[in-house]
Image (cartoon, rainbow, N blue to C red):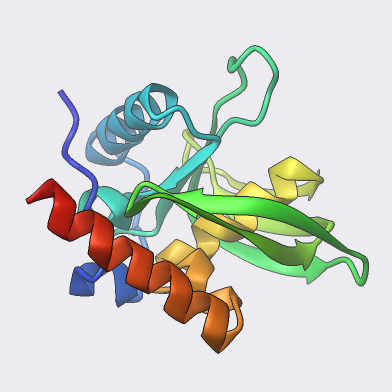
Length: 167
């Protein structure tokens, strides 16, 4: 069983997550729970604070067969492409609402993997977009924070309306 997704405006979604000291059994268990939640959504990425686990952990799988899960602890972007791409983004924390977000097309990322080894990898396209989206979550940012003030206000008004309907 997985934890429920936090719903905006939960303050934990705006918090910067602390670093993970080491990849241990607890971290691996959280990753497993996150992957299950991500695949069940279905989505292509998830950050630990989205389910209330305040650690710098993220998972991503943009593969066609959904069989290439990437587990990251303490991910950080070392380099970003000067070429940008737009992609429609959303979050289970602001359910059923989406917006076009522009992000660098490629990134180089350093993180601890499931073996507690420091890894550096390049990601392009949807993989790069999802990795950046998850790192934003770890830094207390949501996709709406990358929108114009007017677009953000519109999405948050729709979100508030949807929340009232669900109650």
